[in-house]
Length: 496
Image: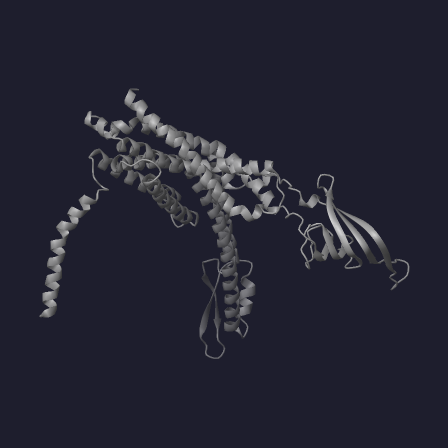
């Protein structure tokens, strides 16, 4: 490795590490914005937040690597061009393809890392992150009793306060319904005022009630239709409620392992193969079931003739061999032959429609699951190839525009990434719906990016001035006389 190679690689590694952290942080902010409402008011500790942010930072790395590669290559080669170092290398007879070669090899290493990261670490991070997120979202909001509203988050109790003082502890006009016995509103406590506080490391809520009554109906099993009523007056009473239902409860991770996001390539391939076999078996079974519904078994032969007693005309009765032959013949030999046939036909048509609709919905659901797994499998490869494609685009554009820093490169990088991301979302959706073959859908965005990258690389090797306004001004000057001639010709025709 010569000095130029070291210079180019050193100029690339710094921006690449920096932009990777920046992009991961941006995606993490997006995650916070999406689920911000699920975090508010749930008294989550710093450890839980730290785990969530760590897991989702790891999840965003595969998506962040293509963008950071594009941005770093744009910045590094833009800086070389802006400081005339790139021009000096070209003047020494070194072609652009040779200048970007060491960074291209480094990008191949990034792609290999991206593949193994997607295959090994991403499924684990998805399982840990999304299972923890599910538990956070299903956790109850912290205690917050509002004025004039029944608070029912404590299991078995409904609490209402007429007034709540600014200290958030003292309340007036309390009504508490005890529903722990599930026997209706037969145990009610009222109080003029009260104070609430936590104890034992916030494990229990204590309500100190002052100047109130407790009303209850005591069920009497010995005397029918006799329900004793009790009223107890108190000056001070304490009610203790367990806050265990507000704690974060972890769900078994085995309940989330079925999803394609939680599986590596081998597990996805096994799922796809088993889905294909299952769909084929169910298709054969459903075809047999539909055939069994048919009275004609999709094939009919004349087996009997009926002679009309008035006109003397003979009518062929088409039936198929089977246990039901005698029953159908008897139906046709009655006086209401046409009506009975029409009723049987309508009943059979309804059965066909219901059966085929149910079978089609079941098979489509299984196919969509298979397509989704196949899409996720191919994404392990496409994310890796996206790093190479983005590098070609970034390096080529950097040598052409010769602008470094976070200005123009950031704008161009975000534009290309949005273009790639939108293409990927559209093609993935069509693939999961079965409208496009999965292989074609997932590789189409990569093919488009590679085509753009190769085209820009060709322009960069020829020192094309794609972003110079003078070039387009010359084209406009050449086109202007032709447009003026056409305008004059149209005016002449209109005047005639």
